[in-house]
Structures are given as C-alpha cells and as structure tokens.
Length: 378
Ligand code: DAH
Image 1 (cartoon, rainbow, N blue to C red):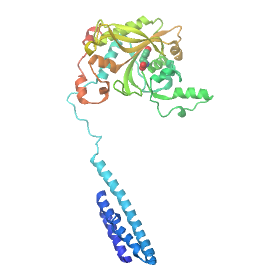
Image 2: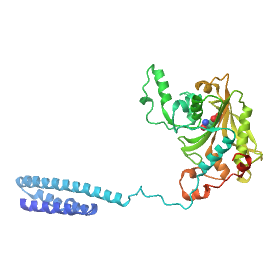
Image 3: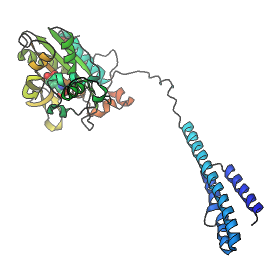
Image 4: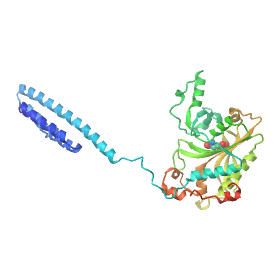
C-alpha cells in the first residue's frame, strides 16, 4: 500500500470516528479498524511478507497511523461519554424550585402535638420552657453532667462528634490540660436533652423549674432506634425539693398526659451519673394477648429516668449543694406518642410519608386530649 493510500485510509477512518453519534457507533468503527479482522490489523498482518527494508518503513508508517487513530478514538469516547452524562442529567433533572403541591388539609405531626401536650401540662404546674442547641459542647453534654472523658456511661450514648474537634481548639498548659480542655470543647450532636439542665443552671439562679423538649442524636439505627429522636428534660432546683416532689410531679404529669386517673407509677432503683439517687420510671400496663394497655393491671412499662440532681452537677454549675437541691427527669417523646396514639413503628415518624401523616397527624383546631380540658391544664 502506498503512502498516499495509507493517508487516504487514515482520513476516512478519522472522518468515521468524527461522525460516530454515540458510544455504540464508535465501537463499530473501532472494531472495523482495530478488531481481529479490522483494516489496520489486516495491514499489520501483511508486514511479515515484506522485505526487511520495506517492512521497517511500512511498519513505522502503520504505527503512526495506529497511534493517531487510537488517540482520536479515545478523545471521541470522552466527548460522547460526557455528552451522554449531560443528556442524562438533563432528562433526570429535578426542579427544586417547584412550589409544593397545595394540600387541602395539612396536619400537625404527632411529635409536635405530643410536645405541645407535654409543655401544656408542665406549664400548668409552673414550669418554663428552656431550649438548648442541637450541637452541644462535650462539657455540657457529658463532663458537667458528671461524665468526665473516661466515664464508661459515655459509651451508652454512641455519639456523633463534629469534625472540628480536639485539634481545632488551641489550649495552653500541660498535655493533660490540653486534652481535658480540648475534649470539653469538642462539639457533639447532643445525645440527650440533659445539657439544657447545665445551660439553665449556669444562667439562672434557683429556684428553677424548667422543661426542655428537643431533638437528640445517637449513632443508633434499627427497629426501635432512629439516629435522631426527641426527648424532654425536666429540672427543679429549690431549697427543700425532695424525691416525694419528684414522684408527685411525674405522677400528675403522666396521669394527665395519658388521661388515666388511676395510672399507677413506680420508681425502680437505677443509675445515672447526673442524679443520686436515680430511678427508672415505670407506669402500670397490661400485655395480655400481646396487646399493650396502660392502666392499673399489675404489669409495668418503663417510660423514663429520673433522680435527685447529683451534688457534683450542682457544683459544676456554681450552685451550692448545701443550700440547694433538686430533681431531674428525662423521657423519649416518640415513646410517649407511640403509647398514647398507638403508633407501632418508630421509624415511620421520620419517613415523611403524607399518607402516614394524614392518618396519625392532627388537625390544628382539634383538642385530642379530653383529659386536659377538664384538668385545668388547658
Ligand atoms: N439523659 C438520660 C438519657 O438520655 C435520661 C435521664 C435520666 C434524664 C435521668 C434525667 C434523669 O434528667 O434524671 O438516657
């Protein structure tokens, strides 16, 4: 084959590559040229029959053509792949600016509703609502609550730490000081609402009577746990507050919340680093026939934790434990909502499924708890 013929062949193939409209068409061209029986492959095969001199010259020329064609194929492949991606993105485009579809009748989420009910009842008992941030300092979330960095109780609350952590905090002093202070400043998604106790005691003088509902986060996800959930915290600090007040307060709240006048309550001894003594709060129930029913039936169900505020916690917040004492409690809001409104699966709370919300949600002007109306809490 003459040089001119080879050049003509090369331009023909380059044209074919250029006009391939998609990856499949380009592959056809590639096989026609470089496949087992491709034009260039066949020419390569003829080299063996040539005289050494001619073989050298033609071989070199063929290699140049092959390199040119391969480069062109590769470049075209990239262009077609990026065009295909653009076309796909265009086709699958989501218009995030689209206005929401109007809903004829919106609903209040059961978490919002339940939180409102809790707040209403405690407000009637003279509690204020306190709030804290979702992103908390390690010191507020753990250390001040009597859980120093090496405390085993921290492990029960598998935590989401923020990426800015120890290294982001410049601290003077010894290595030990640096680690202690830096780890206190580390930020976490709060694992419970208890740090609001700390924030409140640091900012207010006793007497204190607060309720703190809000989002909490733990590195947990299964049938009965979601990584984000809600709790509410209660804190009362005064000079003569005692365990009897704590029990009476929770009894009044739980009876009003569930609308069951004779709902029994018991304290089961327990341990929390931030309270001493500590107790789990159980309410009466029945599980007969696999159905859970609340009331005076002899069986028990745990709904939260509580205790007398540990004197270390008071001291950490600058409150003199020889003058003041108090109680605290904490409960999961989903848990209470599920029990009260018969919602079987925790995960459905956060699926964002409108059918679920239509079923379990509330119409704004409904008062779903008749017990509240008569109780003077409303
Ligand atoms: N913070 C605890 C938790 O998330 C719940 C709790 C227990 C809060 C006892 C309290 C308390 O205030 O006194 O598991």
